[in-house]
Length: 383
Ligand code: GLY
Image (cartoon, rainbow, N blue to C red):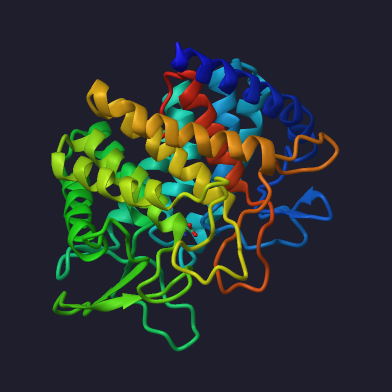
């Protein structure tokens, strides 16, 4: 009974989202948005005169990802047309190469792989497999980790850095193994996930953002603050990647340690959700200034809903209730349903020490939509 109330609420929230999206998609149909400027989406496509973050930016798959989720939900061909525009623009990433990072999963799974899975597109399959090979090529067998970023030219050597976010990118490798019947991709993903379990997840269920290894010997050198408040803190989006990423590694491998790890991070997250449901950028930052990250709430909600599907009946309520609390808070406090402006989820924060905080970011919208569809009972899973 309670569950059907949640589903009804999710359908209503999805209606609000769709009413805005049908107007917004036409304004943004040739864009690859990251955030909004003066109420309108910016543009990372190769056609944009003024790019926001560039064509290799890690978030460039999420606009198309929303289009594919809604194509599946509504069967409207227009969503597929818009998604394909992004997918084709993204071929420049392969040519430019240096900007690519461990985030190939975030870019190619909601674009090319979704296209292949939903329409059978062979171009989508080829692009997805190409991206998976590039991601596998970032694996360092000395420390059993996938290198996060290439050097940024600012003097810092990132050769031995791995980050918790990568747990979500492993899904591209699991897909490639299933698609090719070739276990190598899955083996690399599991070696990385095993390293992440021991090097990122702390005994209390909180997680490090960046861990540094000696790239020659694989010896663990220590952790770095990354996008949260500082070393030893608890960047909430990283916690959310951990919950969802480990839960999905369990889905793809059946290894119960991954499920237990996802639950441990989830219990830490749930015990830190503030009374008002607004998720800070870091659970261990000072109380003031308060920088909200609504995207962390949306991603954590997806992770909780995934967990609710994986655990025995007696445990389900804990995760589903936590997801519903977060989603209802987002709907009532954070969502901008005005069709005259772009972007839905306000108050997303990319990194604690950035100059700007609490703005629209496209992955906030993407994971909010994904969570609503999961709660509503959609049979399509992107990852
Ligand atoms: N790189 C993923 C994130 O900022 O969450």
